[in-house]
Length: 378
Image 1 (spheres, rainbow, N blue to C red):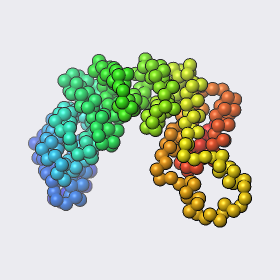
Image 2: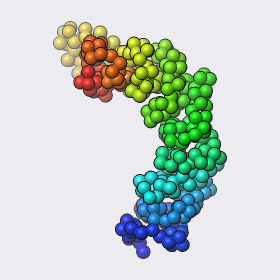
Image 3: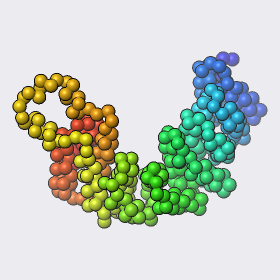
Image 4: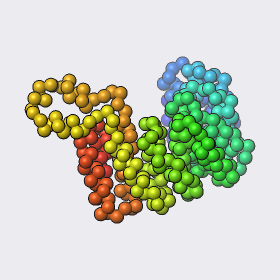
């Protein structure tokens, strides 16, 4: 039977496989991932996504364990990517099926073991594996929590990967660590949060601090009550540093303030004026451009038109100018403040509205669009 015909059949089936049939089917489908033709590999992934919900929990775990072992053994070979994508497809399909969700918790063991034993796996493979682990933690966190050894292993793996050299892997690990703290109940997730905050307080490198703050942002967005005890300490530490730090650190701090304003509003109320000032200063931050000169040029003679497009490009375009990210973060923080209820409508219109109007001349389209959208909200 052709793989495409098998996929059609699996989609129509409304009964589960017998145990032996399920094992034979899963074994055959995994072999499709090693085919030299990419379209056959893709069909194999889709078939596995359908079949994994039609077999018993033990068979599904065996298939996932087999894929994880192959990923470890094959390293950087071409088939590894197909295997990792199949793993992601299978976990996502199980998480969508209410009857199959009980299988998810058992998948944590082979996935965590693979991550522990393969710290140098290709970045695209690591992203897929973390996506699968995220499905497991999000939908079966309580089930995973019953095995303390697995929980410890997952915690150690995630804490090691949040400092990964690859940005995509680092971001995915941060998101999964947030899911771990939010969805895995018990002392272990509390311990993980405590470790994250201790590392944040002790760190001296800006890059490490940004990573840890982004983990805390992920947690605060999903489960604000988990970070209520540490929000005041973070604000106290960061409130006076936004103008002294580099671009990446400043953007991260602004993101932290935006998240706290949205999800921990009562806790930021005592420092609302200082946070508002941080947002305004960030919105005005444009050291590579003099807006006063622009006004003088516009109100002077009409000779400026003679300079043509190249002259305008030199003024408005700078491929190396990335300060607009800071201004965008400032606008988003102002938007969060405007929606938060920290200020009265009169104060919002008078202060935030006035600041936004003054920045209508913003030269970057994406920032100007955000300014206009925020002004509409005000």
